[in-house]
Structure formats: C-alpha cells, structure tokens
Amino acid sequence: KNEVEQSPQNLTAQEGEFITINCSYSVGISALHWLQQHPGGGIVSLFMLSSGKKKHGRLIATINIQEKHSSLHITASHPRDSAVYICAVHNYGQNFVFGPGTRLSVLP
Amino acid sequence: KAGVTQTPRYLIKTRGQQVTLSCSPISGHRSVSWYQQTPGQGLQFLFEYFSETQRNKGNFPGRFSGRQFSNSRSEMNVSTLELGDSALYLCASSLAGVSYNEQFFGPGTRLTVL
Image (cartoon, rainbow over all chains, first blue to last red; front, side, top):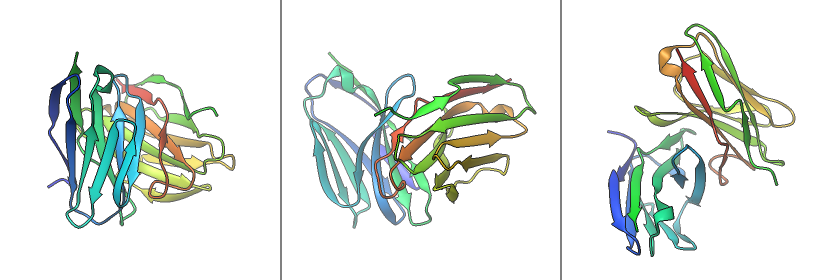
C-alpha cells in the first residue's frame, strides 16, 4: 500500500463546477503540501498544511490529522485550472513522499 | 526576486557516463531539495540540503549524490548513468526546509539517457 493515495486519478469537469480532490496518507506527518503541475513540468506549491484549513482565491485546502485525510477544493473551476494536482507529505522519517497525482481537465 | 533556476534545461547522455545538474535557489533560501520525476514512478524525493549539509535522503542508490555550496547553490551528480535514470529532475528551495516552509520549484532539467 502506498503511503500517500489520491482520488480520483482523473477528473473532467465543466467550467464553473465545484471540484474536490482527496488525499489520504498512512504515516504520521509534520506537514502536507498540495502542488500543481502544468503540462511542460512546472510545479507550483499551492498550500502547506499541518492543521485546519487554508484558502487562497478559489482554492481551499483542508486537513484532518486524526483521519489522515486532506482535501483540495476548487470553486468556480476554469479551464486554466487544468493541471495535475499532487499531494505530498513530510513524514517523521524526514522524507518527502508524493501521491500519484490527480489529472484535472476543465472544459469550457 | 528571481525564481529558482536550473541548468542545463535539457541534457542527453549515454549509458555509463556521469552528469552534473545545477540549481540556484531563491536569494535568502537556505534549503534545496532535489526530486526525480518519471512516468512510471511519479515524483520521488532524492535529498535535501540545508546550510551545506545533507539533511535528508530518499531511497536512491549511491550513484546519486549532491552537495550544497556556501551561497546555497546546489549540484547533484549521477554517475554510471542507466537508461532508467531518464527523467525530469526538479529542485526546490525554501527558507528553512521541506517540513517548515513552502517549496519553490525550478523548471527542471530533462535528462535523456541513450
């Protein structure tokens, strides 16, 4: 079993829809990151969380430490949100472990 | 502020050769981490350097090594290249480290091993 799992693997949405991407992990963590990767490879860090909830524009990230689960929400989705979203955790073994990514396509 | 830069952006090598990749972090950032991304394995953590010391290491063979200089610039070296080393190599910098701060990623070096 992978230490970090994401669902769904692929997601297609219509512009304007509310989107949720889920991340579950099996190890104790000190921090969880949500990353966005566009075609061409560039990666942008969206959030770093250790508890609670963070909001940035149309993006919201939540984490439940007890349930070892995090969600990334996108409100009013737009075609420019099309990308791969990657959940990554920093575990107490001091390693950084990545989920497999969720490929999101937002259609106009 | 200039972002994280990586050189070269593209590289083609043959099996058995060695390669050195360079990463210049954002000014003031003391932590540099390296990652490998392949279609089969996804993103994997290679190592993290902070103030010239390797702080963490991922699960890679000893052919993969790195170092950090006093100006926080970092290099990674892969010796005796194998076909499976073909990948996108990304570095990221942060103020104090992966578990404490947001990571800023460079554009990556795409390595092809023939």
